[in-house]
Structures are given as C-alpha cells and as structure tokens.
Image (spheres, rainbow, N blue to C red):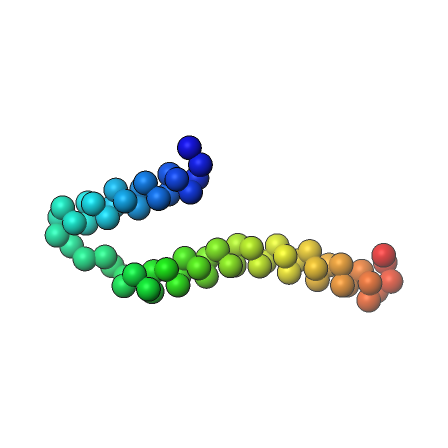
Length: 64
C-alpha cells in the first residue's frame, strides 16, 4: 500500500472513531487543510531552495 493510501485510511478510521465517540474534530476542516498544505509546501520548498541557492552561490563565487 502506498503511504498516501495508508494515511487516507488512517484518517477515515480516526474520523469514524470521532463520530462513534461523539466528539468534534479538534480543528475546523479549512484550518486543518491549510496546515497540511503548509507542511507539504515546506517539505518541497526547502530542498528546492537549498539546491538553487547553492547553485547561485557557486555562480556568484565563480566555483562552477
């Protein structure tokens, strides 16, 4: 199973558990999704920036 499928299944399980116990989600759906989007963008952006800043530094410093 892919990681995304396992994560989705776990989310469905926790959602079902919340429903069964009768509690509300700890975060409004839009806030939770915005947080997840931030996590994903951070995961992608930092390696991208690290690679491109290193290349830029090499060009500027003449170590190409």
